[in-house]
Image (cartoon, rainbow, N blue to C red; front, side):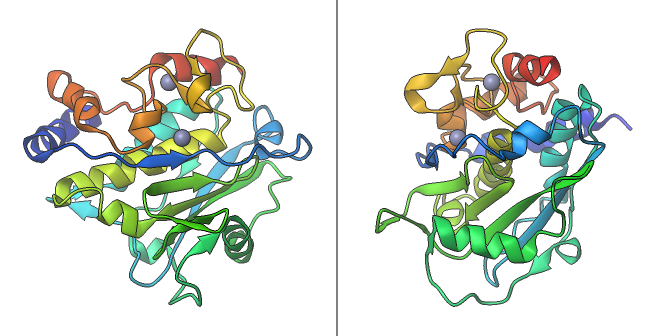
Length: 260
Ligand SMILES: [Zn+2]
Ligand SMILES: [Zn+2]
């Protein structure tokens, strides 16, 4: 089927309800150089599975307006890693995701996230088939003792662990459609970090590293642009109405992965 065309109406619909939101992606503390996930990924992987676990009450949105949300992440990761011949398996429904029940804490430190992910991970990530753990948490990030109510997502630097802070996604807009889009773009953005973007394990092949904002991309049409991970998506989504393409990664980021 023509996937791109099938999605066009979805984004048109999004545009009609979109408004301005501003939240952030949190750049993590750079990890020590040894044993980074990204260093063992390219040229050494035949399959990558996304393992999704959610806390009770923080379950991922799976569909909106009859549209399968997870096809957005699925399409974009497979497009990005297709040039490396790494197929990505993405769950689309809650039955394929793990329900963690209600966790004991209300908010989460970096170490809490690492510990929860360790219980969920089923792969050593030393073999050719690897996985990324994505946790949907019903609380906020605690950074330096402060509760971060505006951080949407976090990749534990150097690891295949991503946390999504559901209350921040839920508060990103009063519009259901926009929350759904913010969630998918946040997931894709954070996984972009896991995969070494931008210039954080995968070297840049052009001048698009926005160093002032961490491991982000200077192309505002790319999901790795810092404000796009930040959920400031109005302008970003606007382009979907002009074309028939749901590609989230810009050509510079895709070129970096291809050249890795
Ligand atoms: Zn980011
Ligand atoms: Zn980019």
